[in-house]
Image (tube, rainbow, N blue to C red; front, side, top):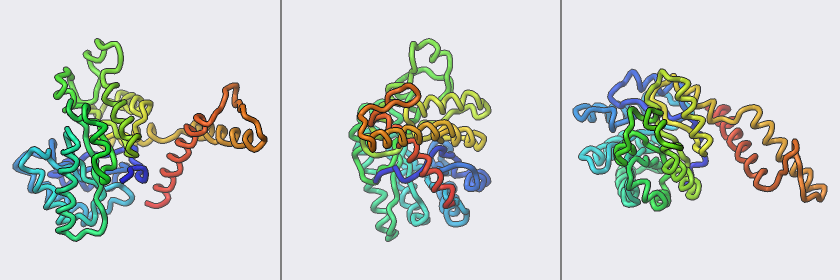
Length: 311
């Protein structure tokens, strides 16, 4: 299943055991809301979290926001119950299921199998997609196979916190620059981030960057968003509503980008119609690659406009 159809500039995470936060998230500026059963929920509150997810998808109006929930790791005693209970209780209202710590294509097929069984038991007519988090060294190594492991897979997501732990990379917080970044002569996360985007694009999936822990550091969060966008990511996970406006802005084409993209397309089409092989705009040569880049910008804008017009 291709992830091209969803606009996900911002994905707001909210703990499943915190009902007031879920209510606020459903009415937020997020493109997607993910109700989390994993790290943010203590073991003795997992059951309450499942009940809240089912209640939320039945009672709250999420509008055009993508409705998601994150299960616990497949290697935990919670994952099977997460899938079975949530899909049985609210499967007809769920868009995506997020699976953490994918470390092999087998993890994807296991999640797909459990999800398919739960959907069959519920007799669902609509398919629930899968979002996979890349958070381990093994996940990085098996990225190509993971990306092509299931037709239900819609997107790949970078998880910097667990990835740092898996790689034994020192880090003071999740997704933030620290003294260790200053020591490294480059971007420490470049390899895994670029690999996630490349494999997502090769498989027709979305690519989402991970969270930035300091939600009061607006400048740092914006810089993190701009780095991710420069690398080709579609959007960013957010842990606080205050981050949403920044993410939505950064991952949307600016007015100047849109104007330039339209001019590139128009100039190239005019040149082709006139039988000219070489095209110049503002002193720069334009070729088919330039047009493809411009068309990506315009397609993104059209998708965002359509989403806004059909809440």
